[in-house]
Length: 284
Image (spheres, rainbow, N blue to C red):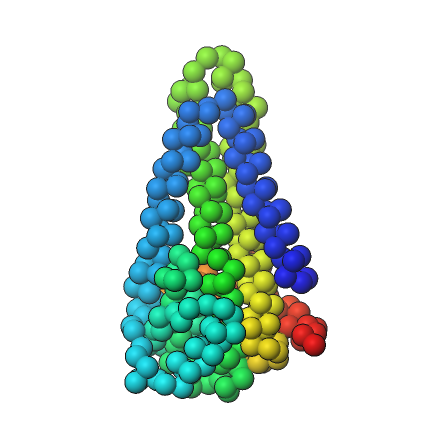
């Protein structure tokens, strides 16, 4: 699937989240509760979005890297950022032997790229360029904003569904008509949060595919990233990484890959499929 296809898929999935919000609200007849839940989720996720770089860097124990410490890394990122039409992001290092990387920041002017020690030691220059171009693609595609918007809507669905479950248990939905509508909405109340979580994860996978293709365009070829992903997948199963599970979705390869989950519940697409798509790209 090309970049346009992934963008359309993201729009479709975001629409599904919106429809879920509307259906649950209509089923419960609780527009006021929906507004309160939306404001609550907006505040929580808005704060996470505004301070996303600080939160992510702290959770992953990343420390600033100066140009003097690693001029080689700076030279690559500067050139790729120029090719991507982005300002130079801040550069951080993560004290881990597992090769991995992530990008964060609410917009290109407040972005940061973090790499592990293992990434710098294991990859060739072409492979490193592929990984860094992928991370810059996340910045250019505003993926932090998109993931936060999805989180807001998923948070609204989960919050309202939880309220509705308690209301049904204690008869707090109001009139008999309200109670009838609440019971009719019971499948949505139970399945809504699960559906929202699955859609949110599908959006994350779609953005990873898009970052792969955009990153290949920034680097000028897809093969460095394809080769790097193969190495990173093998290393993630053999070299452990101490990382907060809440931050695992940030990385180019799941750092907790050894703890395999059903692909439906994964925030990362299958590595073989990512490599297959990259190798099929024609950038001529």
